[in-house]
Image (tube, rainbow, N blue to C red; front, top):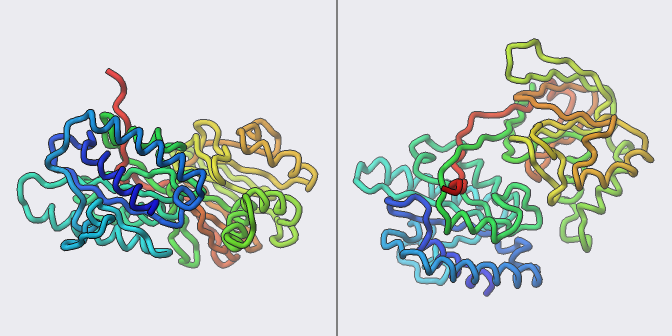
Length: 375
């Protein structure tokens, strides 16, 4: 029932949207029905109020006579409430990517037809970071002609919304009812010597302690009550070194200039690389609190870990001697022990044979919405 109400309200907003004026608009809502915004009663109540308010504002705008759900979302011949509204619910891991793959085929077919009035496709991710990552990964490999005829809007409907276009739903919905432009964003790519991967992330790609926290949170999801991410942050501060040996790692830092790459040898507790600065993870933990896109944290005592762990919520860790922030377009690393990597909430184990490995910024190929500046 919550999903049907969500679909009905959002389709009404899309029908009056100011996205891509002058072109036929097609929307596809890819929603995870298990996301916290739908299943947590208090959150859904708040989301519904925000949607109803935005739908009221949208009705003051002209109706887009040329708008409607995509064929992929509408399932030709379908008459269910979700199909009519252009929402496709995901059925498990990987499904959001498959839906996006079908939509890519639809967009490509419309472009190749050569007909006038090629539709502009708005892809709305309604879930958490996992849903967004699957959608963006599929688009990353889509043909340029497809990406030039679509844009993505990521709504914060999950338990983890660090990759959303706004932390709060009301701010995200403004992208639908306010004048917008298209901007292009890139990804982070992890390559390994053994050919494992490549792995993509669109918010933060990291190795070390925080990847361990993510791994254990995913493993125990649904089994532990409350905020299991915070619980594993606390536990990792005590036990991470006993599970994964923290030894010296050799890093080479490329800042995009013609200067010789900087070499660093550190006992590394974690390394986090963002697609840009001002990035969060772990439900708004400010790991990259300013314009710098790399955070390196050196190994420290258990007592020091416990003392510093809460500072990452506010970004106050940036001034501590164990922490270094800087800008880089590529970070190469190698070590002698296994270490976990995490890509927007998904993890992979890197072994010594995977080194040297590299985290690098990719070209900017993902179209996203940005609000037009006033005036």
